[in-house]
Image (cartoon, rainbow, N blue to C red):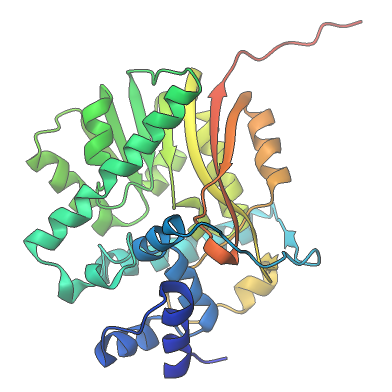
Length: 324
């Protein structure tokens, strides 16, 4: 069903408990999001919605439909088509609305960005890194002071804080525009310990082992088979004792995924998407990559649309089975 003006107004009232700022903002939503689902996915990912959820005592969610299903694929041709779609989408989003594609609040639309607003944008990364540090502390862990991988680094919003904490920083992103802006930002801050790679180069090259992985609000924008492929890549790059801090939606209300049906339904419009990866695949990936799960907690990033969790994991020594 095509998105209408009334749909946009109802979405603002439902997710943000307010009216849209202006008719110009309504028009921007109508041009950016052709369906109600795509608009809803963007709404739950915005900073304003996250702040509102944190301010509420309760966090009501709909009952997840047990008939919802995710059908995975290992077909290399289909996987390549999925990757191409994600790359094309985020290349376009990074070029046309770089800040807004990272934080979807209206204040970060291209026409709203000023030097002051950009500083506000980058300052939000500090709290995200502090949460990572806090979760480590409450589990009695100390972050290894080596190389951290910031997977889906965007414009370096979180990276400028991670690069001040770790000895070395590697930012990886699928958008060339994102990566260029992140590199420029950290260079202007004098972070000579920072390096950057485009995602295809990272996935294909024999990149070095890393001591920590940070990945929040990134994997969810990829179809489940690609999400799992990337998760396996991240975990395989961890060195012994390395720490992973990774966010993944595990279920979304009224969500079904089948690779061929999904590819058949793709149009020309490139928009932000939100997907889920069932927990059985996530825990199988942890096991296959010799990672112990230290902590799992619901982070509310899916809002009322479903369930999203942050996983703190650590790479351990693989125990060889002795013949009986």
